[in-house]
Image 1 (tube, rainbow, N blue to C red):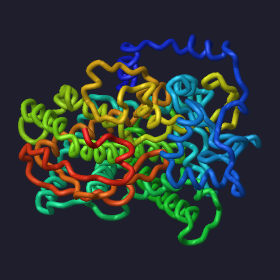
Image 2: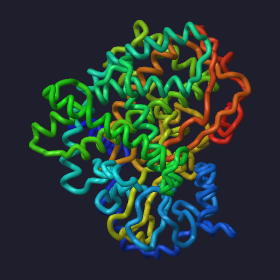
Image 3: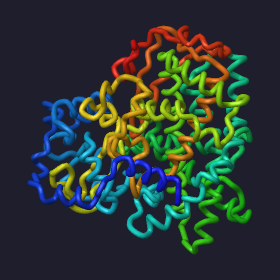
Image 4: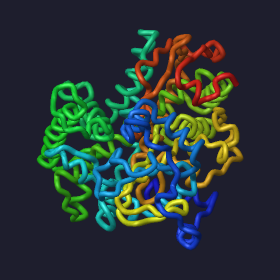
Length: 506
């Protein structure tokens, strides 16, 4: 049994879900047409383009307003609109946001109806649409099988030494510098881990930073502006092509090196190549590269942002930080937790769960309707984009009590359904990199909280930009001091968007 299968069964044992009966009840209820799904009117003069500009300027605010004004399912704009994320497949297009757990259930329990979709990849970069995300049926299941061994709990142990090594290097440097950009440091840290654990590269070996190139390429893929095919320096389309070509060249060279070396190694790319050979599943280079990019994003962008947000939240909630520190001081000998301890620290586990809920990096789960379907009692025709928004579900007062309060102890008696808590999606298309991200997050939080106290610079503004992942906008400067348990001294005045997303005065 794979790790994600264990997780799903654990969730459903707490809150059993009969998928077939739920979907069937949706179909037998009164079904309303697509045009009945509410949504904002196109803006005067600019039409849907004006809505797009508003969405790009602040996706979180746009989605919050949709939830407040239109309910748990809403269209991007009343009428049709060009696709925001995926390549359009029908003339009558529409983008639908799923903002409640019932709709999320309908989407995520029908993986063959609501599929991965195809990104608007420029000519020559179509390989990105050969990833497992876009694969269907038996082929998708076979390909997940080639990846599962790399994320099994037993194999995760092989990554711990590299995580510990990179954490120690960063911790030593922080002690000397005393002030660092937390967001930049966490991205660099996760990038180094990804280069080693995902691609088998030495992060200190120089050359192209493949992980950084993948991240910039992925940001361009989901940017609507990159869909404008103007190939001039400085344009989003040009940057997308530039980074995509680098990723293709470097990743193909890495695949060739691994095949020439007999597919040995513990890194995820080597294991994928070896596993598909053992199973007799012939994957093309395009399929291998697409899968490697998709898994990298899940195991890099998400934990980098998640660790940053958890550390910010702890700095502004001294009582919670103190409780976590005392648990770690009591249970963990030395700087680093043993691998078995990582999964047996109950307060750390609750802190991680709560941080992923209130400031989870995943803004949207991207799906495309491969065939006609039903979501929350509405017809959704084939070709529609269906974007489930965990962030809105995780902070909905109809789902969570005091949703903007950072309260790890809510997990002592809160038992959310699988569709009320979606940090890594759900079901047949659940993120395979979730165990890796969770391991990375727990180890790093354990080491940093035990050894240093981080204090944000007083008065800094923390804002965010969003694609399908919520990332800090700009630097997040923090002071680094030796851990002395004086967590109250780390509470400062913060400004910016974070003050609307989390209660910071409790």
